[in-house]
Each structure stands twice: as structure tokens, then as C-alpha cells.
Amino acid sequence: MIGRRAGTNRVGMRRDDSILTRFVDSVFSLFRLAEFEILFVLFFVIAYVIFKDLTARPEYNRILVEKPAGYDIWPF
Image 1 (cartoon, rainbow, N blue to C red):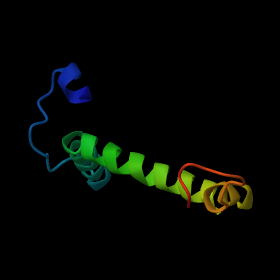
Image 2: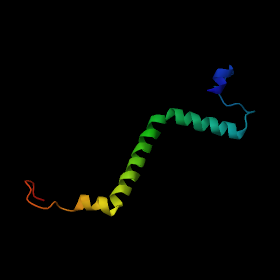
Image 3: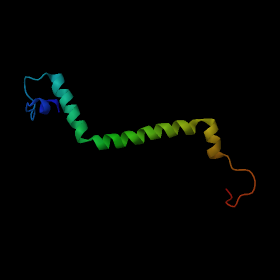
Image 4: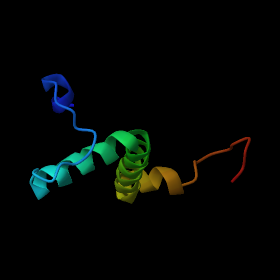
């Protein structure tokens, strides 16, 4: 991106670039290629961790496990 704004052509990797520069460029190009998929998976991983943490707490677990008291139209 910076090379395009500066007017240089960075279509291919040049040999005089350092190995760190080539590595960072390849990581950014991979992220641009798979940005949606990475963010999609990251969203579900974060949601899983949050809900797993919430349901592991005793006060939330009681809500999910205990049956309501009294008469109910839908018996458990």
C-alpha cells in the first residue's frame, strides 16, 4: 500500500528487501486475501469464550438448570 502511494512498483518481491520486510509483506497480503474468513472465525471464537465463561458461573447455571416453581402450561 505504501509503495503504491510513493509511486514505486511492488508487484513482486525484490531481492534487496530484507527478509523481515518480505515476511511482513506476505503476512499483510495473506490478511488482505482472507480478511473476511479470519474475522468470521475470530467472531465465533470470541463468542464461544464469552458464553462458555458466562455459563460456567453458578448463578447463570442455576437459571439454565433449575425448573421453575409452580404450575406451568409446558411441564418439564
